[in-house]
Image (cartoon, rainbow, N blue to C red; front, top):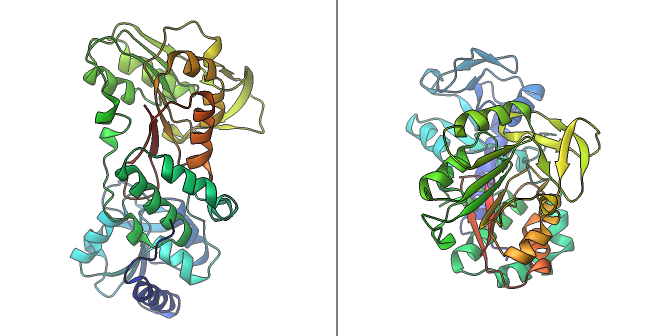
Length: 355
């Protein structure tokens, strides 16, 4: 599965030369993007500013925020656009600015920078379970899925952004692929990790004659957004708790769309098992719970076994989720076909489908 792309050695030389120049140069030095990567760079490097064309903020991480058009022509720029690195690179190229993506800078600079988000432990997991990744590749139902898996695995191992070339930003299509063959009428949707209700609204657009929607969102502000967004639609049931493999009370970090359960904390957020709820048999279950997908699936094993719903589950948050979640679902029902799809230019938003 590991593939060395053409030109890799040349890209490594270019990246190393950029790192050497960036660390030693007296030229203006900027980072593009306002995120944990930019903050990591700002903590250990003397930078001239942060580039962002889409914010009203004037400072970030103690640095001035500037528009790309205001960056000096001789500046060196680290492209830390974690979600859209190719689009950001095109903007920098159009301005004639010399730049390098954060992932390559992380690899070649030798600096103690923030690791790639959602990639912690991946190399170790791959080394220990290479046969599981090979099994998963053989089990995927189409060539597109296998190619997506290869591209993502290779980038996660060597940080060469070229592995991800061809991926585009298409989050509007996330969870709703043609092979789901959703019907305009009669579908029942379970939306786990509903955030602001946007996925349920898209389900309604595609399946206007649905039977029912049950959405689960334990973060209080997000839950209110769900209720407001869906209050005009019939047979929509908003549940202010999350799903797990057992009833429990947990703490939750409120971070908007990235809100997540703190597994070592006890708080006032309730989790229940889907199997314990009296809801109609779902025809589609979507789960995106920022790394808590496996427990949610475990608590739905009875529903999966008896109803065989289509399942769309995020598999990018934790090392090993690609193969572990596949094994988990197939241990309940072995008659699913597996598909993998990806929805951003970076490693975020990878979804595994069970059909």
